[in-house]
Image 1 (tube, one colour):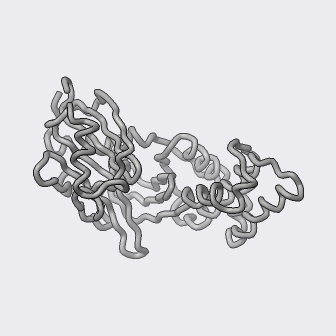
Image 2: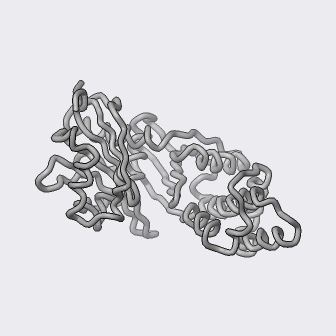
Image 3: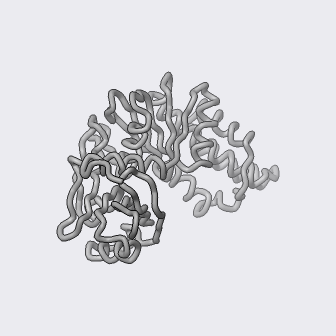
Length: 294
C-alpha cells in the first residue's frame, strides 16, 4: 500500500482493528473486522490479518491486545508491575511473519492482569511526559492504574461495565431500564452508592420495585443503575483517586459518566481517546524498533 510504512494493530476478543501508518505515526487508512481473538484458533490469525490488510503486506506489523494471550496467535508473557509499560524490548516475534506483539502487564497481589490497556497507558505517557497520578480506563472491565515516575506502580480492575450489560439485558431489571439518560438520576445513584456501597444489591432491586409501584421512568432507571454501579466502584477504588489527578482513557460517553461522578467528589479529570492513545503507544514502540521514518 503506497505511503504505508507499517501496520498498527489492536486485536481484541471481539474485533480486529488495523491502521496503515506512516513512519511518523500519521494514519494512512483505518480498517476493522469482526475477526476477534475469541472467534479464532491459532491457525486462523494469519488468514484473518491477510484478509484485512493483505494488500499492505509485507509491511511490518506491531500489535497489542488479546492477540498476545495464551489463546492468541503467539503468547507474549506478562510484564510484572511495578514496571514501565512494555515496549519494543518486550515484544514477541511471530514465527514466519513480520509481526511483533506487545505483552500485557500482571500484578501478583492482588492478582490482576491487563492486555491492551498498557499500550494506551504508554501512549498517554508519551504524549503527557512527567504525568504522575492515576489513569482510569473505563470499559467492560475498568482499570485504575497508579502511575509514578513513568511506571505502572499498581492497578485494579472492576467489572462494572460487564455488570451493567448483564443487568440491563439478562436480569429482571431488563424490564425496567430504557435506552436514554437522565443526569439527575445518575448523580443520585452515584451519591447513594458512595455513601452506602454495601447496599448495592438492594438498591438495584429497588429500581424494579419503583418501576412497578411508582412508574419510575425507564431512562431514569437506566441512569440510576449506571450511577449505582459506578458509585460502588468509586467507593472501592477510593485509594486510587482520592487526592490524585486522574486521566480518563475511554469511549467519550462512558468517560463523561466517570468524569461527572468524579467531579461530584471534586476530582478533576483529563480525558483522552482510546484510538489516539493506542496509536501513540504503538507508535512509540515502533520508533524504538525501527526509528522514525517518513
